[in-house]
Image (cartoon, rainbow, N blue to C red; front, side, top):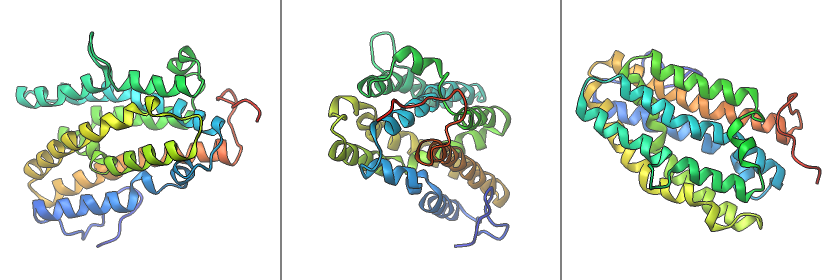
Length: 254
């Protein structure tokens, strides 16, 4: 497999067919998905204390609560009603409906179970600056780049189920302050993520018809892996190495 830079596939990457595109996309996931980040190794291996897990859940809430905003922007990019209908359920998956619980409410269950105040979590006042910058950049990406790239950037969902399984088993095994009731977000995503990923993969394979368009698809996925990775970089720097920036969440003393 040809090399990549921090932002793009190699110019000589084989992208002459839909099958070669999928091969490159799966290679990107295998080498760049944030499941490989040291912070996740600590989180899933029971090596963090409760305050560090709180910091992760607090910051991740900003990402989770921004996903339906991102998806609404993606939806607005398409005149094709069928695509809008297909994409719309993603917003409901996270926002829920008037009579159904969504992913954001499930994430709040996690933060409440960890002892965080919900008003504080929802305010996003305690998150790391890098979290905000990275997540906002994702929303701006799907707004400013082509509709093809906007859909391609969601393809990290191809690799999410394995991470969710690892997270559920690891956190339940290692942390006595975690119970199954607060892990429902991840349990639900085991069903939702494959459905979403399959649609997005089929879309990019069908609509990226030149090597140049396939490279754009790959680079959109690389961008998204960077969005996820840099959030964990910031968490590691702040809460493992102890460099919490001014005004960000500070866990209670042990």
